[in-house]
Amino acid sequence: FGAPPPDPPPPPPTTKVTSVSLSHNSLTSLPLPPSSLPSLTELNVNYNKLSSLSFLAACPALQRLYSAQNALTSLQPLKECAGLQAVCVSGNLLDDLGGTTEALKHLTALEELELDGNPYSSHPSYRALCVGALQGLRMLDGEAVQPGERDKAKQVAKYEERMGDQGSFYTHSDIQVPVGESAPRPLRRPTTSHAHTAAYHARPPPPPGGGG
Image (cartoon, rainbow, N blue to C red; front, side, top):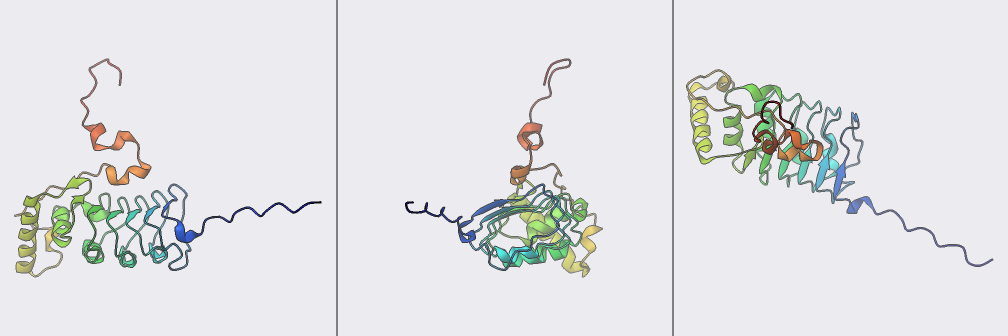
């Protein structure tokens, strides 16, 4: 009868997975064992219903996290991923700016961050506080951090120290800091169309009666 056909090759082990996209799946949780994805460097869970990032213990090597448009209230689990370089958590339920910067300031490799669309992002000094707390940040909400913003952040910090009130940056009016736009930005590219990018919005409008 001949030899039986060889068994099919086994699927690649999860230890070799480097990128996963689970966006738009209405996920409420990701029950992953700790360190079960040790090689994962990019994870896209945009547009789900996640209320916690506790699953990040499964991917200690993560470098880029996309978790926009979920229901997150805390970023403390980010401490599990010390090598994070880019984090997008726009459009969540984060309302404790001090807690957010505390969770992020230990990420020494962090260069790109998107927080717009959270409750605290409408406060006048939101951008200054983030820039001041995260010294390695190059991009915030899709806009480059300018040297002048570092100086502005120092003014905010001095004001806070003088007032001795951790929440006073929400109410003071002598330091004006532009609030970042809330439009989707390039860091969110895995789940957005060209119509939401800065380049698209920069195009001149079509002439009256003309086509798009």
